[in-house]
Image (cartoon, rainbow, N blue to C red; front, side):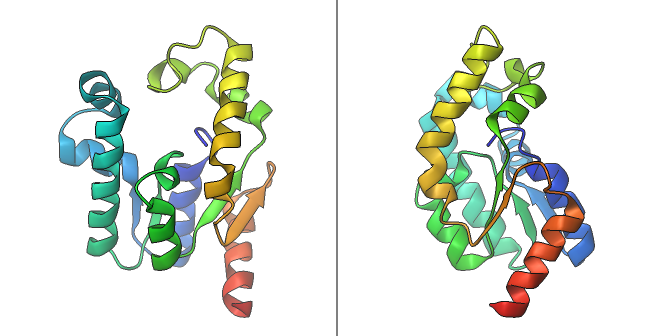
Length: 166
């Protein structure tokens, strides 16, 4: 979900595992030469989702071992979740909607799918609806970190336990 901490956690995990880190949205912006918001405004979500899928495949081909932070919608389009689970270890950061609202309240205007929402109540409703629609995809991840305890150390330990038993 947006503001779950994917990029921050991803950078920390990459350092702990001594792997390269990539943020999929940053890769898309670099390759397209314009912001995600500009892509949404000019071509719409369907165009963005195709660019996202293409970029995901390119990044995974270029870096067989890495920590990748995807956008919250990435797993839900173009069979991306199947690709993510086949090529690596997927982690769902399951942060409560109330916390996401608190994190996004002042930044929602910069996010194309949230920009038009008038207040925190509308933001909470949208996030709840989005989570409900995405849970089936997110639930396919091999690992899930729920709540507010998803620190780099906690997730590192979770991954280590999984790798030791898997």
